[in-house]
Image (cartoon, rainbow, N blue to C red; front, side, top):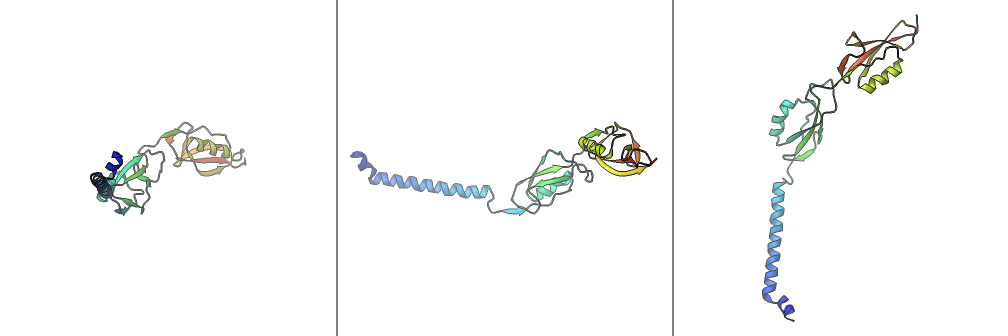
Length: 183
């Protein structure tokens, strides 16, 4: 009986109301601080960083209040200079908050080199799959008189004859000289 009387007393109800108001005030204050801390509603467009060198990214992203992190560079594009941006996430033009981290994939500065396999006297079809399996590409194909039709007679790189075992960067195009089936 005393406990029920205490629950409905003015003193307890005042304390309960005061605790509720303090809790409500703390929740409202926390939400406002969270909005300010997370820059809620403040967005900007991500710049296009494709093909830009790493050296200028610091100043460009710092001026736009963005950060970046370089991801492992497993891709190689021989048409781009070393340490140029190949991919970015988020993409250019997307809206992000201030101080957002942009993830970049860069063109490696020194790409892995592979040994040219011995594909002399192998058919063009098999030679292409062997070159692809080691990471090299088939370049130009030319023919010359030889009895073996579509048999690899010679390997060339940048117009010069190369021997099997030559070490070249991965994705390098290798030109093939094939037989045309005539004597």
